[in-house]
Amino acid sequence: MRDRSHCRAAAIATLGAAALLLALPARAEDALSTVDRVDLARYAGTWYEQGRLPGRAQDECARDVTITFTPHGARALDIVTRCRRANGAEAVDDGLARVQDPPTNAKLEIRFLPLAVAWLPFAWSDYWILDLAPDYAYALVGSPSRRTLWILSRTPALDARTFARLVAKAQALGFDTAKLIRTPRSGA
Image (cartoon, rainbow, N blue to C red; front, side, top):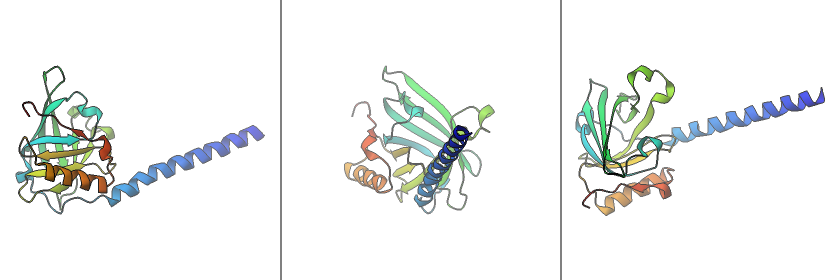
């Protein structure tokens, strides 16, 4: 009897701790702010990845990462990500971005899994635009969990000063920029 009550107390304590840990990221997510407004038509086009936090989705990408967005209706964008693997072969991945915050268009979700599994919660990832040049020349994009981060530009090279400013902003927002991978470009 005594062992059963200890097990019950341990289970309740464990569940309480798990609930607390699950609640903490939600508070951190609320603190992450995005840009005021994104014009999806202007955001469409090709972006060159300048840096990113490591993630399973891009493990195969060794260099030359580009992301091309094409309008898909009023509140979505088709995505084509291209990169070079370490062996030099090209990898291509198609996906979809959908707007989650229509007043700003700054909070999107992205999916690269097949449509058949799009209904599963893990099929979609947050893609929040945290900084954007007035002329759409560069962007800082991340997730409210702070596990994903990308620094993007419209040209293959981004000047060092702008890159450093975006890294500093990401760090100030709570991203672990010590893990940031600078995306190599062929011929650079």
